[in-house]
Structure formats: structure tokens, C-alpha cells
Length: 282
Image (tube, rainbow, N blue to C red; front, side, top):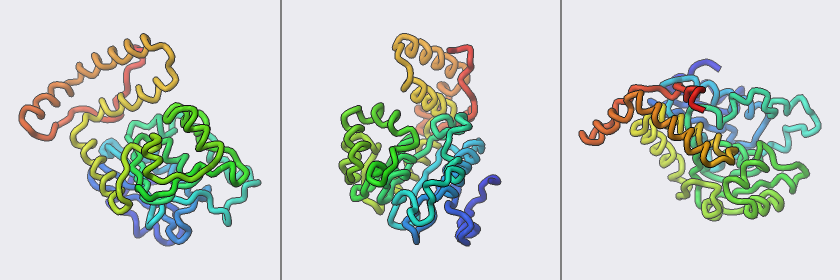
């Protein structure tokens, strides 16, 4: 996929693509764009979305990505009329053959704006991302066992770590439907609001993050958070975090942030999201 234009929506509504991308300054918005099918998932949509996230992550000026659904729904899950579940080749895109391109490995924060129903694969997609804004009246369901498959996209590993083992077992095993309000209470979502405000609030948060927060500290915080999901040595995590903090201080961002705070201005950051934590700090 080529670098994003200001708005590529028109080019993507001819039925040849399942997503569209718009860019507003440092924020990119991806729409799951099959409203006539309630944004139901297809393998093509899966590949397009994965490719778009990687492409946008490579653009230094894109500081946050928002993913939402076109129309009333986020996505009602797999398109049962178009997906052949016995065709292994059609689902090869779902294998994590390039782990460096997994959402949790990307430098850019990804926000799910769950503007309506998120079922099955749509919900496990959103759980891979960093923040989730959900409509209070959305229906959320890990419905996999009810259609004869198991939960996907690492959800059996991730969900217990995010919301606790008991709650995760309940949602994944039974496939029951919960509201956005209950999902927020359980910890599936970061914020809960009215459906007509989900996208605007997610985009506003993305712009605030892009403006007020240092690029390198955001990407470093994201990297440490996901790495420490697997770290059992608390002292090692403490010291690695401290070494990373000390490295950050050498980049000048702390002085820039303090100066902007005192002047009551937006910071003029001097780093990029692509600056990696040095390997020798481990």
C-alpha cells in the first residue's frame, strides 16, 4: 500500500477495498468499510487492515491511528456468506509469520473506536490494540464457540492478562453478549460513551496524544508495557525501566516538556516514534 493521501475514501468505495483511510495531520483514521454487510470481516479485509497498520506505522508524522466502522456497526464478525472456513489458504494471512509487524510491536498507538456491535474476530482485533473507546449500547461478544471455532488472535493468552482469568474464561468459553457498558466495567474498553460520540472522542484523544506527548516516550512506554506482560522478574523490569528513563533524559525531551509546561504551550518535541530503546539497556 502506498503512503496515505489526505483522504483516500473516494478511491476505495468502488468495492475493490474493504477499508478506507483518511489522514488529519498526525492522526490517521481507518474505516472498516463494508456498511452494507455491517462491516463483516473477510480475509481481504484482514490483510488490508494489517497492511494499513504497518504502512501507517512507517510514516513518522503519523502519531496515532484510530480504527472504526463505517455506519452503525464496528464489525459483526466474519461474513458467513463469503468466508470458506475449510479453505486453509484463505486464512493464511491470519498466521503471525511476521511477528515484528504485530500491532503490539508497532511504534504507533492504535485506538479502537468501537462505534457499534463488535462480534467475534472484530472484538479480538480490537483487543490487540492499545486503547478501546466503546459505545455504551454496543453489543460485544467473543462468539467463537457458538459457531464451532475457538477464540482467535491470541485472545486466550491476552484476555486473562487484561481482565483477569475468571472474567476472560466466562466471556471466551460461553461466547455470551455483553453491552459496551458492561464491557467497560469488565476492562475490555478504556472509555465508554454514547455511540454518536465514540469516533469524535477517539480522534480527539489521538490528537491530544500526538500533540501533548513525546513521540519517543510514547513508543517506549508502549514497548515496555507489552514486554512486561511476559516479565515475571519485577526487579529486572524495574531496572530496565529506570535505564530506559535515563536514556530518554539524554534526548532532551524532558527539558522540552518542562519548558512547554511552564510556558503553557504545546511542546515542540525533538524525537520520533521510531527511536528504539537501545538493546544494551536490557
